[in-house]
Each structure stands twice: as structure tokens, then as C-alpha cells.
Image (cartoon, rainbow, N blue to C red; front, side, top):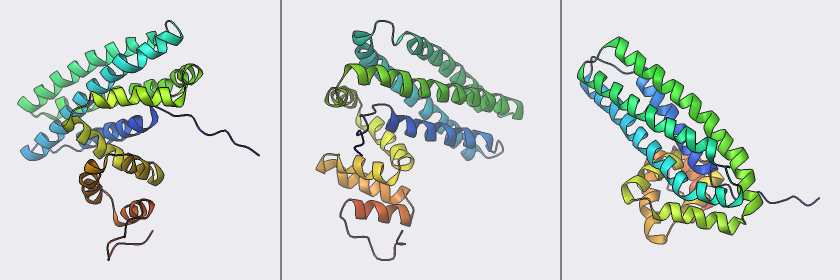
Length: 226
């Protein structure tokens, strides 16, 4: 039987990274030690980085994906665009409450921030699922994979080195072995080695071994064979 190759999914990889980033940050906020200034600073620092990344991510979608949707189907992006505006308001609220916790580390303030982030994460999971279903259906009906990849390239061209490094960190951790190898194999040669250095620091021996074999690289002695 012939199987239809999967269509190019512009949302799936970055959403995997964002889901992991969100849940990791939520867990970190839940276990904050308010009596440890370094732990508090690190946890709130990660939250700040997440909120900045989330803001940037939705702007990339607004600028590059939503116009493509509207060209094919007027109003197709209206609901999600409205949710994006709501997300920016929530992000501003989270930043304000994080600043309050930083200024006065109290248990009630920390728990309020944790619950607010949990609600934001929960809403985002539903939001991303709609993008990966309804938006993808509209994109696949109107564009070839090559055209969708061109949209992704425009997004990537607008991401600076620092933001790109951040997303690569979470992508490396979030993707499955095949996706991870495809991501790194698709990088420009000059960028591949630094990303591999980062991957080695992030992955356990088993995952690193799988990545090396997928890329045709020799697995360093002492690593666990998976």
C-alpha cells in the first residue's frame, strides 16, 4: 500500500520546544526556594526569558504565517490573532507579578505567580493545538511544502543569534532522535559544530550516541550505546 508522505508542519517543532520550555519553567517556579536569593533569581530569570521568547514567537506568527492564511481564507487567523493580543496582556501581568515577587519574596506572591503561569500554559496548549490542526489544514490546502518552508525561512531570517541559540537549546531537548538529527543536519556547516557542542552538554549518553550515529559521526569512547 502506498502511504502519503506527511506534509511539512511549520508549527510542530517550535511548539514542542515551547511546550517543554513552558512546563520546565512552571516546575521551576513551583519549587522556588524563597530563602535562597540565587534560586529565586534563576527561577525568575528563566520566567523572564520564557515570556520574552513567547512574545517573539507570537509576533513571528503574526508577521509571517497569518498573512499567508488570510490570502487563502479571509478571517482564518482572526481568532488566533485575538488570542495573541490576550497573551501579550497576560505576559505583561506575569512580568509585573514577577517583579513584585523579586522585590518582596513572599509565599503568597510566589503561589499566585505559579498559578497564573499554570493558567497561561494551559491556555497556550489549547491555542497551539488549534494552530497545529485548523491552521495547518488551511495552510496545506493553499500552499505546497516548498512554499511553507519558504515562510519558515523568512521567520528564521528575522531571528537574531541570541534568540536562535535559545530556541536551539529547547529544540534539542524537545525533539525526538530523528527530528533532532534532521534539525542539526540541516544547519549551515559553520553553525553545526557549535550546536553539536551544545547538544553534547544537554543530552545524556544514550541520546548523544543516537545523534552521532544518525549524523554518521563516531561515538566518543565511554558513551553508553543506545
